[in-house]
Amino acid sequence: MKPIHVRAALVVAALSLAACQEGNAGRDPDATVPAGTQPAPTAQTQAGPQTGPNTPEANAAEAPPAGGTTAAPGGRTYSDCMADAGSRAKTDDERGVLERPCLSLPGAPKQ
Image (cartoon, rainbow, N blue to C red; front, side, top):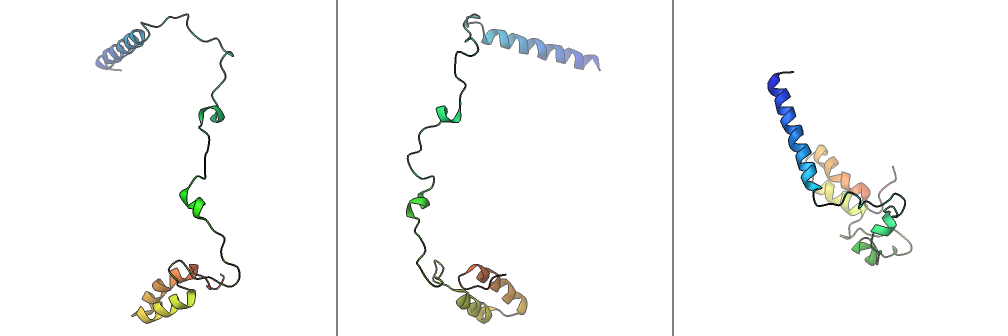
């Protein structure tokens, strides 16, 4: 190791030691809490009580209507989406790209 590195390491170590001693200068060294007299922190003792659902969407959640397939939030179904993709596409590749989102809509065939 080069002498300059050794000196630099000694300076850093001396400054670190001095900083530690200054930080504890006002503390009473005998004022520590004996082991086992203070309970260990746990998630239960540190966390506040949960007063409601975790997300606002949980309050607005509703069961899906009974029977049949339902339309997506935009009112689209698989057949509507496929017809739209076929009419808008100029090539077969473009139609494949436009049809891909249709697979997640109600009425789509299971794969």
